[in-house]
Length: 220
Image 1 (cartoon, rainbow, N blue to C red):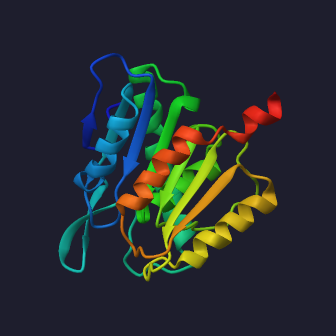
Image 2: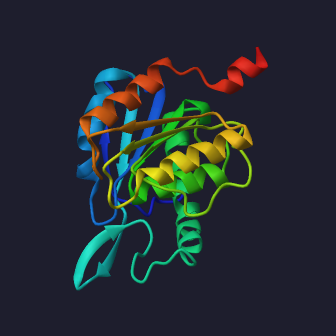
């Protein structure tokens, strides 16, 4: 197994895990930003391993930050390419963790906030089925998907008052996914801005606990 390019924080169960959650922080943040969500997942899924990788260090506006892809002079034109370049190392990292813990792809969930959510959505577009669920908090697609993921369920979670990534982008993403026949949900919190808010985290856990993937109904 190749060594991981990412530093990580982890919450591991007392017994061998049966589920895997990978959590991606936002631009300029760190793995610690995802700890509240990690603790909530650990409390809700006692047999889950929760792994929080750190983004790559970069210099932005004269200070060192952690990002998944460069944001300097980021435009709608170069956004998709920059995100796409960040997908292969993340995909390999997820495969390594699945092998490490003996976890199936279908029992793996990938969650991200802001830039981390954008990366998670792009990974689901490029690697359908590498994870069973994607939880995208306050993120957006860098490029609209051309086909529906058949093996990954997408959960969009957003604040109506988000001024960084407008909620309309999440609503449009949901409409695009529905038009493609994807398995997706969209939850908009009316009084929440651009933040990993407890209400959105609680709703994410609710979705995980109650939403049976559409592919299971289709195959029944």
